[in-house]
Length: 456
Image (cartoon, rainbow, N blue to C red; front, top):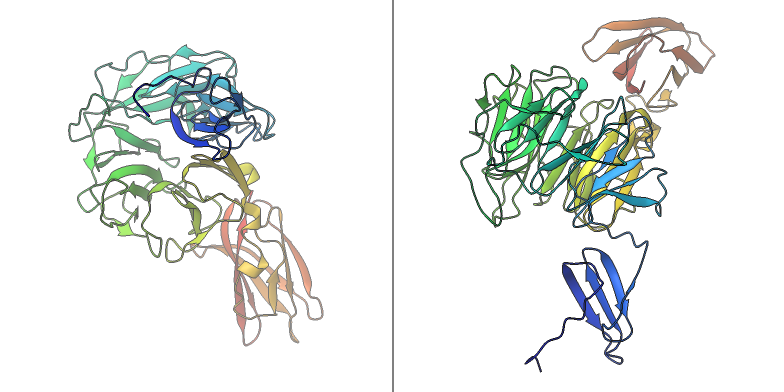
């Protein structure tokens, strides 16, 4: 009756979360823990592990840019794991502890980085088959978050940034580190749960001198000169845990910040956007429910399109937050802690906290039915996004029509003629870089237009 106890979990994974005993057969016990699910048929004297259940709690996800079927991720109590094939049953462990940020050098995948809790960072020079510590220069007295952020400079993967309560930079693939900021938090401390730490880092792809950081105590900072000076950006932002800062891939002055209010019983907006490097902010939370937003990715190919990871799945907006909708089908209703875009294949990978990892092909996101025509039935872009060729249907009425392709700044890129009686056209996009454009067709007394995306 509880006066004495015997330990019956010998040989199973630690951190027990749930237990069920069969009401008609008390010897049959089901045990759930951070390792998965175990069965016992003899009241815990021995256990059988149920393999291949997709119940891993991923904190992060990473994609090998050269081999996008190779996926990596840090997990709760199960280290850093990867699959070299992309097959669901071919994951294996490559580093220990509670796994967090994992990075694969996009230009040389022999360099792989992993960490375990509280920022214990390591590097591999043989493709992740063995690791060595990579903490030289990082002060042991600095505070490090349970999930310490580490990122590449998107313009040079030999340069990495590491966030404690101060920001560190390495220019030699994490062989050594130098501090480049003061304490960017409000102080913090803690023995059992460390707080007052950096939680997110974003280096602007358009200008590496611009680095944005967020902290667990509501601070957002920017440097525009590589760390020599720092500007505080949080005066008009919520005093909440910053889950992510993300510089727009095309414009270092555009930046997004997301928040979690999980610890507070009051609603505050969760997503903000700035177009002046954090000087002012606009709430773009829109119609989203009150839920933690854990990550945000601006789409480099689709104008005004953002993807967010939340505690209730992945959402997309195509109009900078005016409208939001859940992205795709079949994603379990569990927290999504991290998302990663592999741009060449247009694949979005999601790390879920309890149902392993999922992928979504973004090419299916934009098609003809998603493009409202200004003159229905007369102009149809057949493949949108386009690649090397713009293909469209248009039937001029009785005269030769003109077409123009312009960029969103109004600059003319292409001009040509459409003949009466012909309704299918192909226009080469050779020499036009990836991005968003407008196809305009003009006749004697009318004009129609349609937006399209060029992927590569």
